[in-house]
Amino acid sequence: MEYPKALVSEGMARIMVPEIIPSEGETLEGARSWAPVFYNPIMKMNRDSAILALGALQRRLSRPLTICEPMCGTGVRGIRMALEVSGVQEAVLGDMSYHAVRLAEENIRMNGVTDRVRVRRMEANLLLSLHARPLARFDYTDIDPYGTPAPFIDAAARATRRDGMVALTATDMAPLCGVNMRACLRKYGSTSLRTGHSHETALRILAGSFVRGAAVHEVASRPAFGFFADHYIRLYMRLDRGKRRADESLREMGYLLHCSGCRSFRSVKGGLDERGGVCEACGSEMKAEGPLWLGDLADECFCSDMIEVSEDSFIGSNRRLMEIIGSVRREIGMPPGFFVIDELSSDLGVASRRIEPVIDGLKASGFKATRSHADSRGLKTDAPVEEVKRIILGPDA
Image 1 (spheres, rainbow, N blue to C red):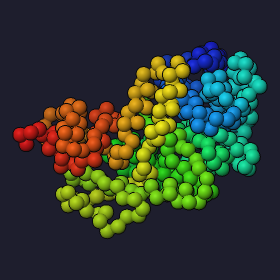
Image 2: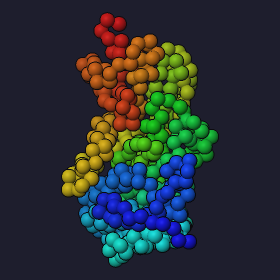
Image 3: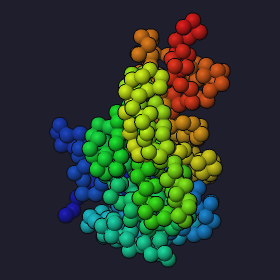
Image 4: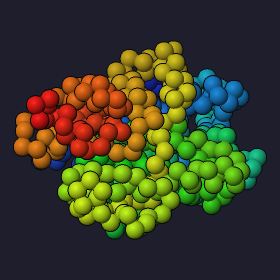
């Protein structure tokens, strides 16, 4: 089947993509979903972050890299990695779609990377499983599906070297954010709730699902960098060897408990106990979500490496991505979850407060506080909810 194409530039790559012409009354997103090969320009920042993360990984490994993108579409991500990250020795791309494979091959030739990038028409888990033996594994595996990455976690963990990295994108925010709890339990083995910090919790549920899936193979894992943006979450998981390290990763698993009355929350590592049902602050019922990852969602040194890589790349001009990296970096060492200033202000019957004075007030009282990258009105702090409300009400409260 022939279809109209358009030439677009992204990063250092120039690629052919299906030309999207919406019908009368049809949205651009709807027309894009019917294209023979899927290409979403909105996900450029996602791909930009992958370039920085792979560059940071290459600095740490200091060796030629082998990478895999088993659902490649137009091939833009793999091609950009080959062009923009020094040290990429081989990139194996894959897709089940005949049209995607043909178009990816065309784009590979157009960008002059046929010596390092190849594409196979193959189901993603099968392609990954063919590389699960020790000497055939990849340094970096990128799972970027339409929807959930859950069906590919096991194969990705097996196909990646034990000092490598697995990148995960999830766009199924309804299950992860508590709108469809049954789907979250089915896909990720966790209970999700609708809370003010659901987008951060989504990252923790995905990270926890990967940590548990990798531990089955005695592989330790933890987030090197993770963020929420637009309609998706993105995680970069570092892998390590050994039963003991895998057990250490599992110790960072647990639950978040939410009060239905005063909006307080707390984390519990391991399993739940009899204290989980009642809020210690107001005595209201507390609901649990999890199991999920309770540790940091980023590594300080890895964030620094990403920023340094950006300085030698045009990606450094992507102001929004650089702000996200800086914001995520400031969240390191903070407790899981965050308060939404608008929600607390509404509960108190006052006009919504500016977030910076609240942060300054909490710091002046000896607490840690910063904005959440996942919500411009989100406040991450180690202060109890009563203290946050006191600061919101002001000194005369």
